[in-house]
Length: 190
Picture 1: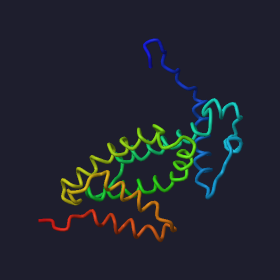
Picture 2: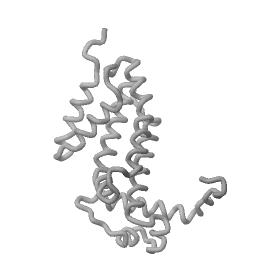
Picture 3: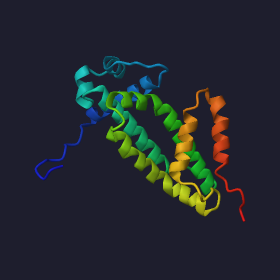
Picture 4: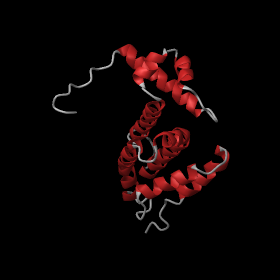
């Protein structure tokens, strides 16, 4: 913001509700297998006019970016609310949420990449946020000697992402993720 710009006024409650409805509908629509949902269909499902849709999201790319950032916000917030009996269990629970985040956002990220290219700042700005949110969980798990000390969060997240790209239904992929997360444990606890 330049010194001469005024901050944006707060949104009215009804405008915020409309934005929330649009995001909820779009999130569900993009989660449908093979979804090629138009902006008009999103507006119809949300029960808003096209002007309201475009006032909130001038184009499809902006809607996809908002969905992506909302989900990143959720995974970052989850790092502070995940429960478990031990630091290792807390980290593992958060990594399961990260896996679910990545698998559910794959289609949104793919379309966003196709529309804007790999240089879209939404990707480069949000990965560090996710890593910053998860680092205290890893540090606690490593300090308690429940997770190997030779792994970084980047390596662990890259492993989870690689598993998330495996084709197969959840019953096929879940044991693979479980085996990989079991591999985070130190081989000797001495």
